View 1 (tube, one colour):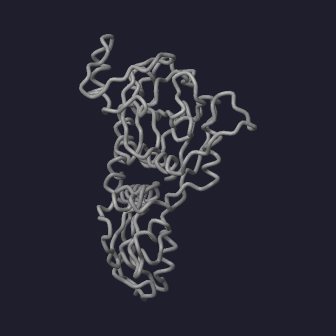
View 2 (cartoon, rainbow, N blue to C red):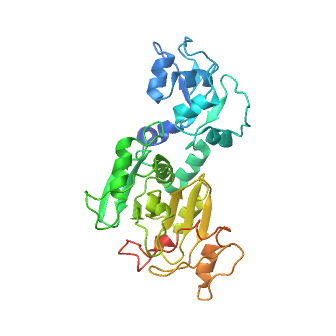
Length: 345
């Protein structure tokens, strides 16, 4: 290859990298060009003018000059404006004051300072995004998930969250339809999933590069081993697996999320995932149609467990009551569940 052709190939590769999804999101600075204002730059990156100004120690009405380098706030972060309170930030973000206090390690009554960086629920540090991208790739469109509903054998793409990380009403209605059980009709009424379930599911989809998410089970009626207190009955839970991702890896990532229930079933093809007030994790050795067989932390696996199964399970679940867990997989809807795929291991 001649030096000229080598140069062209290098330039083409550089342009391709810049065009990859996520490349722009990794950019954290902007060089001001002639005629640009804070408002115009904020619109380009879909951030608040006040946040862009605060991130750079400026006022929202400050003038910027060509060549000036600005730091662009990352998604899921805001900056305190003059006179703004924590309750106002929580209202704007659609979360609770306690959520913000926990994420930002703030004490009750602690005063805020102008320009203080506040992390909002759903924020993911860029370093974590980059680590995940190096293993699983970057999602084609962040916030948009490919969902395969095993009950109906249908595949669809759903925008789970908008550019601010919030679940639109249309997305809540779409997921409500996708989470209906096998045999449901449009006349049947089921609960709408909470927005936090979609927001966390979007994080899961993005983390694993936008790979197809198989929804094995969503809403379930009480009965059999599904109790009235089940998160499935409330529409707050889904059982999922992801193409090419071992269930142990999916399980471990889900457990890093805030205030979720995670159930691991060594003898099935999915991981249970729900939103709740307190983090909970359990291991259930039952097979489809069997009563729950929980293994709590410190307890031995069942005698018929293989060496490989024991290694994957580890120390067992947390010390939670049966009410905290979700019972067995008796109503598993996946017709392919009889033969777990390699990804489940």
